[in-house]
Image 1 (tube, rainbow, N blue to C red):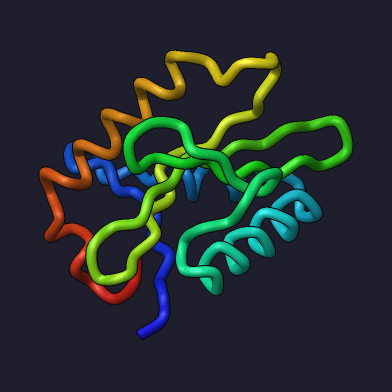
Image 2 (cartoon, rainbow, N blue to C red):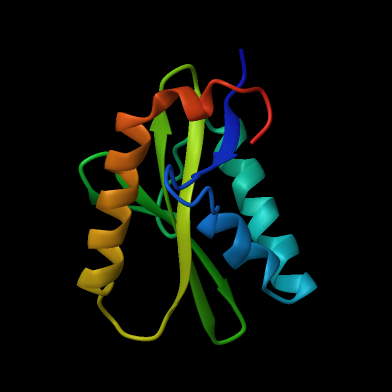
Length: 123
Protein backbone atom coordinates (compact mmCIF):
# COMPACT_ATOMS: atom_id res chain seq x y z
CA UNK A 1 0.00 0.00 0.00
CA UNK A 2 1.43 3.36 -1.06
CA UNK A 3 1.34 6.52 1.01
CA UNK A 4 -1.56 8.88 0.30
CA UNK A 5 -1.55 12.64 0.72
CA UNK A 6 -4.54 14.39 2.29
CA UNK A 7 -5.18 17.99 3.25
CA UNK A 8 -5.88 18.81 6.87
CA UNK A 9 -9.57 19.64 7.33
CA UNK A 10 -10.47 21.91 10.24
CA UNK A 11 -13.04 19.93 12.26
CA UNK A 12 -15.11 23.04 13.03
CA UNK A 13 -15.01 25.07 9.81
CA UNK A 14 -14.12 22.27 7.32
CA UNK A 15 -11.60 24.62 5.71
CA UNK A 16 -8.43 23.14 4.21
CA UNK A 17 -5.67 25.70 4.83
CA UNK A 18 -2.86 23.82 3.03
CA UNK A 19 -5.00 23.37 -0.08
CA UNK A 20 -6.11 27.00 0.02
CA UNK A 21 -2.50 28.17 0.40
CA UNK A 22 -1.20 26.02 -2.46
CA UNK A 23 -3.98 26.97 -4.88
CA UNK A 24 -3.48 30.67 -4.15
CA UNK A 25 0.05 30.54 -5.59
CA UNK A 26 1.21 31.14 -9.18
CA UNK A 27 1.17 28.10 -11.48
CA UNK A 28 4.96 27.62 -11.56
CA UNK A 29 5.18 27.62 -7.76
CA UNK A 30 2.23 25.21 -7.51
CA UNK A 31 3.93 22.87 -9.98
CA UNK A 32 7.09 22.79 -7.90
CA UNK A 33 5.13 22.21 -4.69
CA UNK A 34 3.21 19.33 -6.27
CA UNK A 35 6.50 17.84 -7.47
CA UNK A 36 7.85 17.95 -3.89
CA UNK A 37 4.61 16.48 -2.53
CA UNK A 38 4.89 13.60 -4.99
CA UNK A 39 8.50 13.02 -3.88
CA UNK A 40 7.30 13.03 -0.29
CA UNK A 41 4.64 10.45 -1.13
CA UNK A 42 7.01 8.15 -3.01
CA UNK A 43 9.60 8.35 -0.21
CA UNK A 44 7.11 7.22 2.46
CA UNK A 45 6.61 10.65 3.97
CA UNK A 46 10.26 11.42 4.59
CA UNK A 47 12.65 13.66 2.67
CA UNK A 48 16.07 14.79 3.85
CA UNK A 49 17.17 18.41 4.14
CA UNK A 50 17.04 20.73 2.28
CA UNK A 51 13.61 19.45 1.09
CA UNK A 52 12.14 18.74 4.51
CA UNK A 53 12.98 19.50 8.13
CA UNK A 54 11.76 18.29 11.52
CA UNK A 55 9.85 20.96 13.46
CA UNK A 56 8.34 19.44 16.61
CA UNK A 57 7.08 16.00 17.61
CA UNK A 58 5.82 14.33 14.43
CA UNK A 59 5.48 17.63 12.57
CA UNK A 60 7.83 18.40 9.70
CA UNK A 61 7.98 21.19 7.13
CA UNK A 62 8.20 20.76 3.39
CA UNK A 63 10.61 23.41 2.15
CA UNK A 64 9.94 24.74 -1.33
CA UNK A 65 12.09 27.63 -2.49
CA UNK A 66 11.16 29.39 -5.71
CA UNK A 67 13.20 32.36 -6.89
CA UNK A 68 13.55 34.44 -3.71
CA UNK A 69 10.40 33.10 -2.07
CA UNK A 70 10.59 30.44 0.64
CA UNK A 71 7.34 28.49 0.87
CA UNK A 72 6.78 26.15 3.81
CA UNK A 73 4.07 23.53 4.30
CA UNK A 74 3.72 21.73 7.61
CA UNK A 75 2.84 18.04 7.45
CA UNK A 76 3.04 14.77 9.36
CA UNK A 77 2.56 11.07 8.71
CA UNK A 78 -0.67 9.65 10.08
CA UNK A 79 -2.12 6.14 10.46
CA UNK A 80 -2.62 3.90 7.42
CA UNK A 81 0.19 5.54 5.46
CA UNK A 82 -1.38 8.98 5.16
CA UNK A 83 0.55 12.21 4.85
CA UNK A 84 -1.52 15.09 6.20
CA UNK A 85 -0.65 18.55 4.86
CA UNK A 86 -1.53 21.01 7.64
CA UNK A 87 -0.99 24.58 6.41
CA UNK A 88 1.47 26.62 4.42
CA UNK A 89 3.02 30.05 4.61
CA UNK A 90 5.64 32.25 2.99
CA UNK A 91 8.70 32.37 5.21
CA UNK A 92 10.16 35.86 5.57
CA UNK A 93 12.63 35.46 8.45
CA UNK A 94 15.54 33.18 9.34
CA UNK A 95 13.59 31.39 12.08
CA UNK A 96 10.28 29.64 11.59
CA UNK A 97 7.77 31.89 13.38
CA UNK A 98 6.56 30.47 16.70
CA UNK A 99 2.98 31.37 15.79
CA UNK A 100 3.17 29.13 12.71
CA UNK A 101 4.56 26.24 14.76
CA UNK A 102 1.86 26.67 17.41
CA UNK A 103 -0.79 26.69 14.69
CA UNK A 104 0.63 23.46 13.23
CA UNK A 105 0.58 21.82 16.68
CA UNK A 106 -3.10 22.77 17.11
CA UNK A 107 -3.91 21.41 13.65
CA UNK A 108 -2.05 18.19 14.46
CA UNK A 109 -4.10 17.80 17.65
CA UNK A 110 -7.29 18.45 15.68
CA UNK A 111 -6.40 15.59 13.29
CA UNK A 112 -5.54 13.18 16.11
CA UNK A 113 -8.79 14.02 17.93
CA UNK A 114 -10.93 13.66 14.77
CA UNK A 115 -9.43 10.74 12.81
CA UNK A 116 -12.72 9.78 11.12
CA UNK A 117 -12.43 12.85 8.87
CA UNK A 118 -9.42 11.14 7.26
CA UNK A 119 -11.03 7.72 6.74
CA UNK A 120 -12.45 8.75 3.38
CA UNK A 121 -10.60 7.87 0.19
CA UNK A 122 -10.34 11.40 -1.22
CA UNK A 123 -9.66 14.55 0.79
